[in-house]
Length: 638
Image (tube, rainbow, N blue to C red; front, side, top):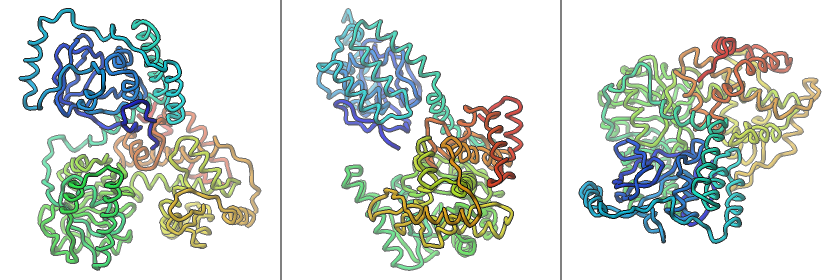
């Protein structure tokens, strides 16, 4: 996800996806009109008070931009007067939280009158401060403070140029610049009028609706209909990871980062050594970039231990297997885990497609088995699919959902099916991409259309990143299990040439070692054209609109089936899976929210047009009954 630019003096990264923030404040007659989040979870309106203080470690933010809005009720007008134009603009445009001590150090700032000595003395110092100003009259009003920038219009034009270049598809950041500029132009009341009108207009944008939807949807993922909030949970003090490969190492890092000891198992010492070296390399990279301090690095590595014997895992509270995606391999692992793990230990599989119920059946304790599908790279990607087996206990489910928060993952519960939520949907997305090649597109054209729509990367670049051999293995299984399911053969031809993607330096595109730039390959285009000729097909010109609709609506229709079957409990969970796991554009809110915005009637009509295409899969384009029902009633998924 691309960050907003840094404008001014506060060197705070301006990220798109907001982070929850908590602050500890004492406020004595404060003047700020916007709301801060307190450590207790309450929000206070600070509009009418005139003096401010903060506890050390307090985080200050105006997060509205992350919901597609701007700080209302005078936030864009008062903060520049209290903090200075450049620092205030950074805070308003970014929405990021900044420590109170950092803001208090800015020259000329009038935001804080006092920083408490410590959180423990907060109440005492707040009362003393209040008494010290009881006789001070009149107290200064923020609206009366001067608000100018030495470069005036030149500075704001510079800011607009930077923000516009980096905030494509997000109207709020640019409007924030306009609102802060208005604070420097004339009377306070005039600036308030600009702010109010701009806020009202932003509320009506689809981008704001999408971002607000994601904000609420992310927080709703932990609400499981039949698992009460007070469900008993197990204590997780130590974790074991089976497999020291890329996935296993990434999974281990999540727990090490959270201060939880990890024991990693492999069959050979060489594999363990490679895994530990990769973890060290990842942490050392963070050290060099200043994202990790040496003491934290040392602490995390001290929590990591290794073994070649299953018996040495017996005391772990949770064990996660991250071995080869083949049911026979999983069977051997889970039978060993069932033998050695203590009663009450949670046995988790990182499988991305296999039947969790079958895996659970390899043990005598299926109620303790759950799926924890991490997304690669596991130490970076925020999404975690929690797969609930037919016999997974509520206690286990509640425990891993809480644990997900501790390791800073957004967890979405899925039922058991082939591919769960995300990969089950992406298969049909990939099928449509293949049909488009048969009909006249190039991989580059399809990818560019999806990236212009807002995806982080198109389907063919994504395939090269994930490994085209993975999809090939799935298709081979499909050919046996579902011979009636239609696929383009171009991806198979590509794999037969050994072009598996970035890991081989060649896939749908070519790659230079050490870089991820996708370079179009003429031989791949020729291969597609020759295959098209072998089928007797004449290529046609296909619009970007058709490309986007076929791929996105394929996600929507399969997701509707997933909802019907109870694999996902709510449409917003599916949106979160695709926002955090598959690069769906946040400003569109996820596939289900996007379908709601387009109108489900229009989605169904488009699907019926696609069904008339003899080169497509007419059976797939039959609307799911839930989708058809909602469209007929004029309703929405969310």
